Each structure stands twice: as structure tokens, then as C-alpha cells.
Image (cartoon, rainbow over all chains, first blue to last red; front, side):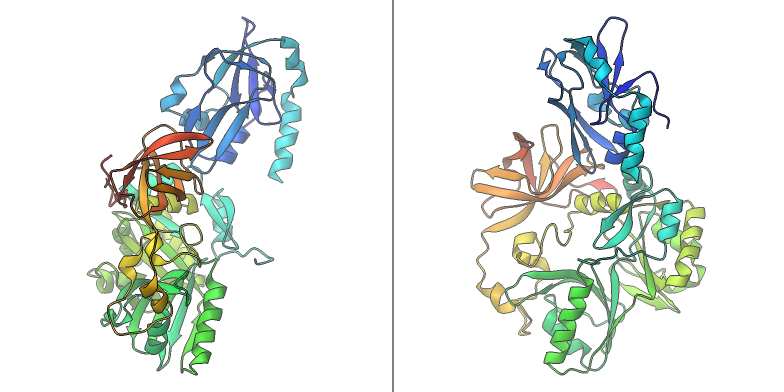
Length: 129
Length: 364
């Protein structure tokens, strides 16, 4: 699985996609779902919650373990992906189309502080060895 | 802890299949080959196979075999009269704590086979050797690392084994549950750790890759320790080192039914058990709220706190389930709270098993 070049990445294995309306969607990477194994539960943040960059804001649980999801940018949660409530396995099937929550960023320039695909790929390559 | 991680004969086969490997009891073992949940369902609905060669087959032979096992095993060894009969039992320390849980197979009064856990195998051999030497008994203990162990489990498991090993068909077709038979170099046992029908096969390690390949060609799904864990949890079976250890008596981990406390026979740990007044017992939990229970989480009940010993997601129930050690007054049907990641979630107390033979056994 290649790391999509049009997304930005956090070291804690979230991906971020900027949409035309200025909001961003957030999910976990293919590498993250592979390390976790079959996902069985997603706890998304509450809509309206204000997040600080780096704050714990959601949880994914697999057959093996629970993992925290950290806010990659500061902002307000404006939507969550309700499809995942009954079908968390969609993240295993396609991590990059299974967004978990949508954020209205306080300062979109924070996006440039995240990793691009090539740099994120280097981190996961190191973790695998 | 061992300094080097050990590998079974099938190790290269697992890695070639793309298995995610994990350290289990000092062995590098497959966790899953892609999807743990799918492997779990294949075993409940059809047939899966597990490499369990990390477990140790330990042969006990010689005139005093029966005397030694009568002394060290807590279940009634005298129930083993028919050759091939198997018995699940604990081996206890003098305080009644569980040194290991194992299956003992009886072949003759001077020939038994124990199959013990991987992580406790060295300790078990040392303990049995010490007990034998203490009684100067004529017993030979032979660790059979020359054998590989394969568990083939599920409603279609026996049929697949007969297709792969036609030589054992006639001898093993009528084999009742919890019995084994030796056919040439191959031991076929109708035992397992999944709550499904099936066989555990012990055979020369040199032959295991061929059997694995044949079973794969017959459509048997390779399953890893992840599915093995969720299957045994749904079946309400204990995992040594997690649900019990040397500090736990069988009373506290749902294994009172395996104890022979009525016969006149003395065994190590018996005196301690007869004087024990256990304050806690083991029961099952089904989570009513959304989330996943995990081992070591706190259980809050009307009668005091308890602890989850094994928790996770039960794919057959499509809910989180757990085994927990709770105050003795807690009973099936009670509602309790489990502290999951800082939040109290509601759970129903049930009597395990949760699922067996493809069916859900608990009503929530």
C-alpha cells in the first residue's frame, strides 16, 4: 500500500485531508490499522468539541489493543463519520477513505507543520525494521 | 526468560504466508495471517488449523508413572482406565497455587503423555524431575521436542484430517471426545482449545509441513494465536499466566470441577485446598455498553471490586466479553460496572461459556 501523496500525516499515525471548504478530515493510516489488526470499535469525539493540537480526542480498539487518536490540528469537531459506528472494519479495508472526524481548523497554517507522504513513509519503514 | 526466541518447524511456512509474528512464551508464533476475526469465524463455521508446536509433549514412562502422576496432578488420575483416555488437570504447588494446567493422556500404566504450556514447560520438567527424584521413583521423563503439534478445529475438522491422513481414518473415526489414539507415528486426540470439535495431532516434526500443506489444499484456514485466544475466551477456557498462575487456586479460576478432593488419594496442594476459604470466584462478563474490556481492568460490584483476567472482543457474540475474578457473592445475572479507559461501562455477569459448537450460549 502506497502512502497517498495528497494527504498530510502526523507522527502518531493520523492522516489529514484538506477539503475545499477549509475543513479537514482525519483518519488513521494504513500502517496504523495494520499494526492494530482487526478493528472492532471506534469512539469518535463529540461534535462541537474544541481540540488542541496533540490532544487525545478519539479511540480505536482492535481485537488486540486500544489506541488513542491525537488531534493533528487545533480546531472544532464539526462532524463524525457515523458509518464507522457499526462498521469499524471499514478502516481495515481502506484506511484512507475511512475518515473518523471532520475538523474546522483554528489556523490552517498548522497543516504545514505535518509530515508529507515521503517523510511519513520513512517513519513507518523504520518501525517495521 | 529465555534469551533467544525459539521457532517451530513451521516457522518459515508462517512467515512465507505473511503471518504477523509475536513472542508467545518465548516462541516466535503467528498472531494472524491477515484477519484474526475471519480466522475465528472459519473455525466456528468450518475448519481452521493452528501450529501449537510451542507446547510440549512430555512422555512419562516406567513402573512408577502412575504413582508420580497421582502425587502431582490434582484431577483423579484413576479415572484413566481405558487406553487413550485424556484428562484435563491442574498441577499445583503445596499452597494449592496453579503451576500449570495440562492434558494428560493415558496409554498404559507405565506410559502417559502430558501436553503442557510453552511458557511453563521448562519449569514443569524441573518440578516433575524434582518430585520424581524426591521419591526415587522409576520414572522416565522424555521431552518430545521431536514432535510437532497441530490443532485442527471446527465442525469439519475431523473430516479434513481424515482426508489428509487416510491411514488414521479407520482407527480414529469412532474416537470419542477427550480420547486419543496412536496410529504408527501419529497421535490423534479429540481435544482442543476452541470450544469446537476437532483433533489435536502430534506427529514427527519432519512430517508436519507436508500435513500443513495437504490441509491447506483441502481448504483448511491457517489460524493464529489471536483467533486461538478469542475462541478459547468465548469457550470460557482459562489461559495460563493470564487467568491463573502460582498465586491462584483452582477455586478462584473456575476449575473446582477438575479437583479430586473426595478420594483418599493425597496430592500436592490438596491439604491447602481443603483448608482454603476462597473469597473470590471466576465468572464471565458481557459488556452492555459500547467498548472493549481488557485484562486487569477493575470490576465494580455491589459486593466489592474484582478484576478482569481476560478481556476482549468476542467475534461470535459481536460484543466485548471477559473472564473476571469477582467477590464470591457476585452471581450470574448481576449487573456490574467495568472501568474501561477511565469510564464505568455496564456489564452483565454470566456463567461461561459464551459460545461453543458454533452457537452463542449466553443470554444477555
